[in-house]
Image (cartoon, helix red, strand yellow):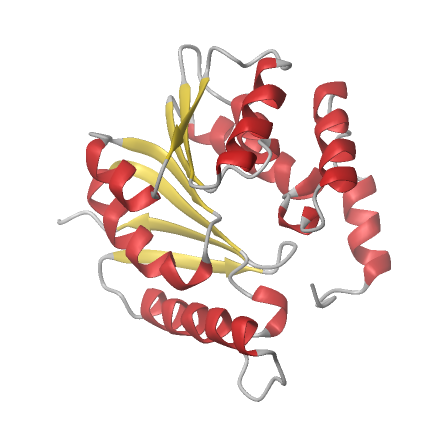
Length: 220
């Protein structure tokens, strides 16, 4: 991941976010040890940011697209309203198995359900409404995920999309390998669409690798 923000500033922000509990420290350490792509994990600052969004919304039903090893789901679980649940979609069996163990070792095993399989197929079977949807999966499919969840978003709900700056690859003229270029171009189209879509209001923030917040515009 390209450093879009000075690393010292990122470190300062991480250090001045509330430290994670021991079960998340363990998930972080194991993910860094066992997964070469550990950078897909949201980490301390963004994990707390997601928790606070869930808490501020009073969210009782959360949908996550892209579980990885479970750090983000566990972060959000700490902010759930009483009786709340998280449904998290994961297509990779190894990721799902790892996340399931991490969740079972946490205080939130009864609040998080992992749904294995292609996310678009899973979403089609879920009734909603969702108070918060967190999208953090394959980047070329973000637009399809967005369209699938928008009708199932609660009236005062939020869609949160991770990696919407994608290391700066959304900017024109960056020298990238083919895979990153494809994802960056798809995200750039998605970002352009969102800011001109009359159905929603969005803000693309520079938290970590870009986090976009989206709400629906309700008919007047």
